[in-house]
Image (tube, rainbow over all chains, first blue to last red; front, side, top):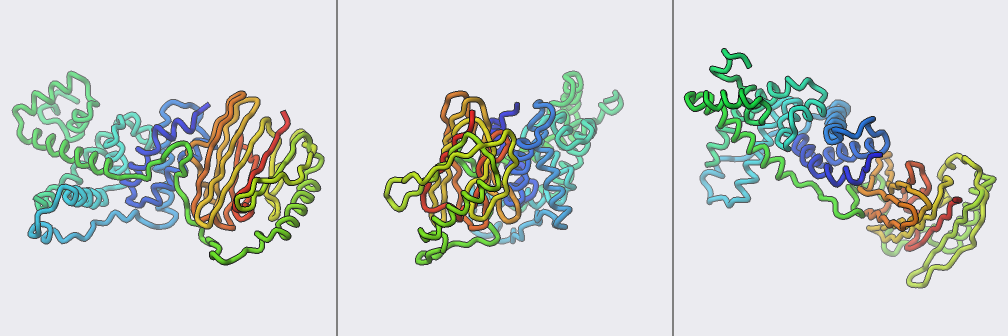
Length: 166
Length: 261
């Protein structure tokens, strides 16, 4: 029998971080995380192994379905920042630089396909390729290619923007 | 990876190398190659830097961290939140009407779910700071497998037979309420407190509660801005044992449900 409370404590925070990064929508992220644990409680998987991947799969599918149903693309558009002001204004403190960099990353993520985004965000949370493949239900030997493609796009967008921040 | 491609590993190979998803032999070959190939080394460094930015980014997404077992993961504001004004006395708070509702509710429950066996419902209410008083209890005969009765508008409790005892304490203000379940059962059971809003969304506490043989477990559910249209549900072993609407709760009360063993 699956200890839902233990699974919640173990995975909820990481799952919510991933979903928030994936959607840039805290409400949708929270809905998706909630759905995953409700599903775990009410319709648990047949086997308790790879539960983390199962939770991420349920939550990711929820996000995809929600976007399809509401015809809404997750609003990952770039924050309209006047980088000229940042460059010429007073020196930003560490916190401001960090938040600006995060905004850049979020903007760059928006340019990726959903699958690329999901692979990279799970990878950023320390998922092994097998887990990512299990969660997203794609062949394991595709993970590297999808991730590399996403990173190429990401780095191409981040490099010029980060240069302006310096 | 073939020997030919090892001369210049693909981006996929480099990423797998960074992620430790290549064999030790291939990892060694890629590392040796990068000692003499600035192009591949540059790609490798770019991927690493980008990966670090992503890790920082994900780590900076600060969710509302759940607190202890009593945390509410999220409260969804009901679409039709009805918050009484300070000086408004809602009709269901009037003692005479409330008493009438209780009598009608118990009568309806008895007629709707007869015969029932072996459980006693005692409803306590306290007014202000006075100690709760026992309202007339009622012994009902439970059939072996009664259906879950629908939630009647005047009924605080719908139930299903289950082993054990559960005490529900609730407090409520205009903006905040707390439902506390204290459970002692003769066997293991898993419970969950949930809140259903107008859009039928279920809010689930992180812990639910688990009771073991002979032990007492307490779980609390804290909610914000209770709505007259929001229903709370307590499940045990995934069956509903208690449900009602927040509007039916007065400022403070207590429900004891003694199930047949």
